[in-house]
Amino acid sequence: MTTLDVVDRAMDLLLAHDMAGFAGLWAVDGAMEFPFAPDGYPQRLDGRAAVAEYLRDYTDHVDLRAITSRTVHRTADPEVVVVEFEVDGIAVRTGRPYRMRYISVITVRNGEIAGYRDYWSPLAAAEALGGADELTAFGVSGGDR
Image 1: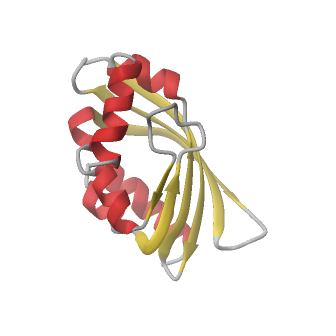
Image 2: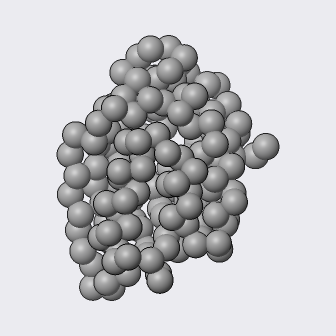
């Protein structure tokens, strides 16, 4: 798969709530990073297994319903793209709208995600999920079991 094919597949799997499939796009030694993560939330996941564990309960917390916008920026490196996208969903526990804008820097090698740097707003997530403690519990429940 090309870099753009992997990005398209990733978005399809997110909307299908197939977190195992989404994590399966990672290389065995691929990484996922959260540069804006708050204290107590994982900042980096190393390896496909760690990404899968982090995402295992994702749909218990967030019900993604739509990707309302998406722009893919190609870079000078054909393995790297910057994806701006916005999602609409529901925070499962609170029933509040979950609207989030993401900027993701994705590196694909040999058809697998080697790196995924995920820039998102912890404040918006905490508001939807019910507070900072809920956000931290969500991150820890998936990231550090």
